[in-house]
Length: 160
Image 1 (tube, rainbow, N blue to C red):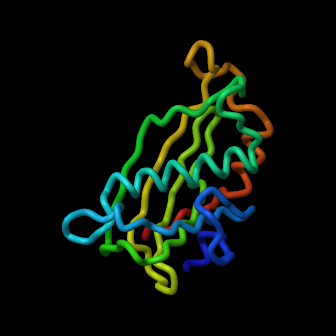
Image 2 (image 1 turned 90 degrees about the vertical axis):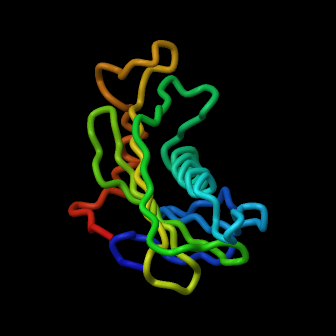
């Protein structure tokens, strides 16, 4: 995997485990494949959401049901470079390409275990808002969130 992902392989942890460097191991199920035996596009987005939210809860103190600020997805996209599907084991890398006052742009790489080139790359933008008003907070995202996200920030995001 490319060094710009700042990840290290950690074996075959369960889907919800994320190490401090932003890695998620995802074992796809047979039902994740479409009729062409490729992983269904909706599963990629499920995985993108999973790695981002697992990182936020573990490293940024996000409590989805009680935190005063929540992240709303305002943009998402995915570029596909090669098919992958069950029974391949997937490693997902997470990094932050841009950290604004109340927004963050994530990039997620989907790698097949043992293959260096990304099979897909997703982009995901969160805007952190006040839970009650669904509007950005004047002071931006809270310090704990920002500090956790800063650990994944890359200075010059590489184009894959």
